[in-house]
Amino acid sequence: MSWYAIESVDDAIDTTRSFLSSRTRGEWLRLAIIALFVSVGGGSVSSVTNLINIPPSMLPADTPPADVAPEGPSPVELLPEAIPTDPVFVVGLVGIFVLIGFVLTLLSETLRLVFYDGLRTGTVQLRRPARRRFGQAIRLFGFKLIVNTVFAIPVVVIGAVVVTTSGEFIDGTAMLVGAFFAAIVFGLWVIASLIINRVTNEFVVPVMVLTDSGVLDAWRRFGPVLRTNLSQFGVYVVVHFLLLLAVGIGQTIVAAIIFGIVGTIGALVGLGLILGVFGGFSAAAGSTVGLVSLGIVALLTLLVAIVLYLPVNIVVLTYITSYEVSVLGAADEELQLLPADYRTDSESPETPSI
Image (cartoon, rainbow, N blue to C red):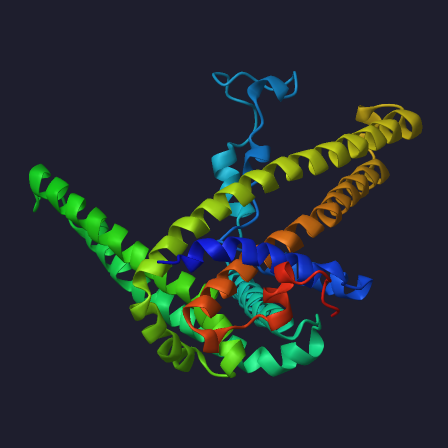
């Protein structure tokens, strides 16, 4: 028995090489924009919140000890005045964040469809396929929102019951048993949600692009393929996980090298600016011009590192996506998204022209 979930690993390499081999500078720029908003395997930007944790040794020397009450009003007394409590302001702020999240998510879904379109046609465009796929992106966004809401409702209800239920009515043993079974149900619930979202992203979305259909129609088309190839897709889950693990390790190493080198250069530039222009850190920190200059250097350093890292993201996105659609096409030839010249590249002595 042939396991095409394993064979597609090499096919994806051929596809990636063929697809990226003759891209123009404009197409690389479009791919960079796509790679900024479309991730693979649920990846996201790493957290940097640990940067705000300042060790006690780095506090100013004149900071009063913890056991000595500072003069003046307590920070707790100033806290209500520092935090806006106007309901209109709070609602407006929440609305702005929700709107930004909606726009970014819709943009991500649109570019995901655009990228599949590029793999299918062998060309990389943005505006024309984005206009064509925007309606599908809205339906895809709505489908995911409904799925996530349906799966979130029981969790919210159970959490509200646990919080509002007093321990006077439930003894400790009953609470432990209930928490154990609730954790099992919650785990199964999360797994089911992840499966639906992953299948939608990795297989249903390319079917949408290939058949110009909506989410539900694409699910109906892919459902029988999934049921008749359960063992193949079981192998796919394992291989896909291993690929993401290997790719993630490689990305981490490359990112550490790129950001380390660029960060070192940026730090040296900032140090030269502090010592050569302002005469010291205290003078630079006490000057508005100094702070702005250092902020510009830090921002430029980050942007340069991101730009240098984007080609890695493009290659990874192309390879992982090519692997996913290769498995889909092997499971059902009618759902083959990749052009024939990409799939036969390993048998052809010449790279196909795009």
